[in-house]
Figure 1: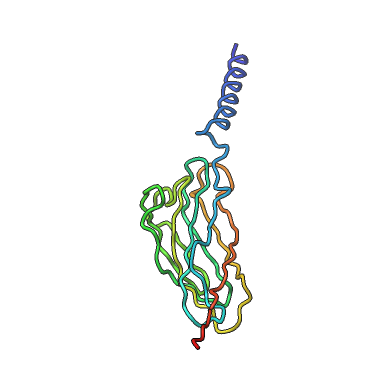
Figure 2: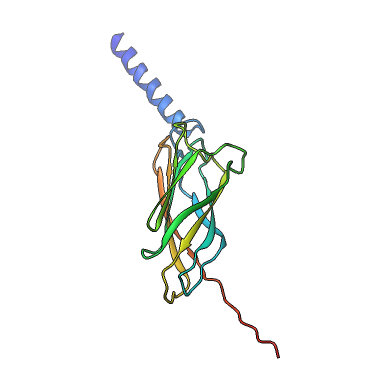
Length: 177
């Protein structure tokens, strides 16, 4: 009798694990795969030497409750980046408590309130960065790398990376005759 109860218990636990993995509340599918950072507006002077504002949006493409808790944007190595502005809420109206830290050509937005994270599932959040390329000629487009981190809820991946190409402003000159 004891042996049958142990076998029955193991089968019930195994069935529960399988059901939980197939459930929207189970462990399967809880990741941030497909989340992105997208160049939205702004450009840079191809000759460099000026400060320009470039804006991006970060989108949390998870299909569950994993929140994004960090966004990192890396510009070309010789550029200087600085925090400019960021939306106070994501597209779903959730308050955003990211702090922005610039170091050389990298800006990092990190969770500061100790909660789940900042950008909720299916939501988008906008931010702008001031960049200063050095004097010189830049061949367009320039690649900007990004990294997004989730709050580690559920299954991998909790971190995704990618890149976005940005193009310079086209300077036009006119002559009046």
